[in-house]
Length: 406
Image 1: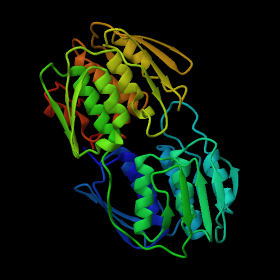
Image 2 (image 1 turned 90 degrees about the vertical axis):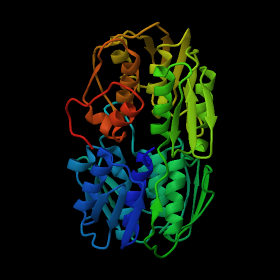
Image 3 (image 1 turned 45 degrees about the vertical axis):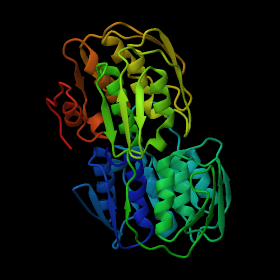
């Protein structure tokens, strides 16, 4: 499996915290990584990305602005806010864009940074932030937020005194960021828990790291094997971290698949009959919202009715009308999808509306009769590296007809 997109998008801005050269191994070749690279380059950072190794030189940062032209493409661009204001005392960051579905407010980022002593105002679609030396504070997030936890943590490592973050996000990508910051000289206790204690230091230094495997990519391929694999066949997902995926693997076993789990691999054997399984998304270590769309595609062919509830993003169901075009029987009310399994799906033209929705449509297309055309493939390229080539290697009849390839 490739390196984790969401980990890479946090590690890259962290290089703003100390001038020098960094080597980030196992960095995936994705549209979002390219977008973050262009954003950092616009600030004066040197970026070289070759053979999944990202070399970052932050020695000559001359601009503290993240303009709309870059930020509109990806919400994770807001990650530059904390490092810029902590290191340079100023940041001018456009309010973020990204996936088309649902509001994802940045108030948690702003409130957390204000508690550290950052002066922030909003003007003409931009976050204007300035500060002198940040000071430690106790921050309690009303909602566990991956982005806000990462942003505040990156700022707090250079604050004077101790910062405590309660209800911090526990996702592996946040732990990976924290461990990288520790390699840079930060002092962080409680990594992997929802209670972080950060003792600020005067300065950090460059460090190298290897990006963790992408648990969502791995989960997507396991669901692909469960939905399209033949009974008696096996699909082995290698270079993954099974410890990050227990919620998904448990549900796959409940759905009838047989799994063999090793230290860095998961092997799945389909049963030939998909059992209906209810899923409720939640913060880590619960079932990830980024696997909700793929799970609905699987349940579309289950032998019964399943209920899929998304408690993270109430309106993340834009893939449902497209799955219905393929013959799925799904109804959505508020944040709950009721999926009545059908015997078969039938190919049609469908349109991607966001990253994970595009993955669900490909999974459904693998088993649908006839040809399925998935349009707006650029959404897919934001988070999956060469997915069509990887699926072809498993025997899928899939090809990229048009669109930029990464």
